[in-house]
Amino acid sequence: MLNSIDLAEKVGEALKSKKLLLTVAESCTGGAICSAITDVAGSSDWFDCGFVVYSNASKTEILDISDSLIAQHGAVSEEIAAAMAEGALANCEAHISLSTTGIAGPTGAVPGKPVGTVCFGWVVGGVTHTERLVFAGDRHAVREQTVAHALGRLLRYVDEI
Picture (cartoon, rainbow, N blue to C red):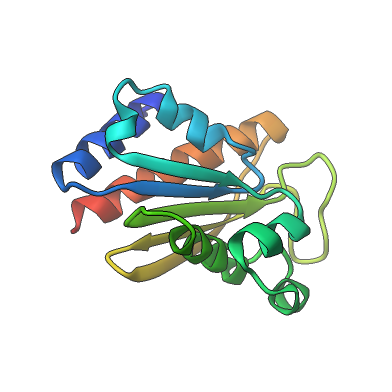
């Protein structure tokens, strides 16, 4: 299995070959996806910017997600992951986006959303995709798995363009 930096390199090669720019909106990963991306030399050729929107207020203020949408679905939901990915695109020059929002733990679980629940959003080719997974392990493990999954799935979507 590829590590996050190897995945970021492959994502970068795919995006660069298609002349596309990426943006990232992160909550539970706290900038870890952007870190993996910028660990790749030359990432400025295919990476536009990243948004770390940890609080609900920052999701509203920076990505233009309505308070009512957060209240209706909760910050950890596919609806918010989609809104984060779409909001990131609307606030930069990128063509493609990905987002993460989740409960890395060890606290924060709510009924129906155990620790390890992560929701993802990707906007590729004008189409928004979402997914909800539950990862096992401690906070570090959940975040590592989230970064790897977000980049791995993004690579598959970019390859399909």
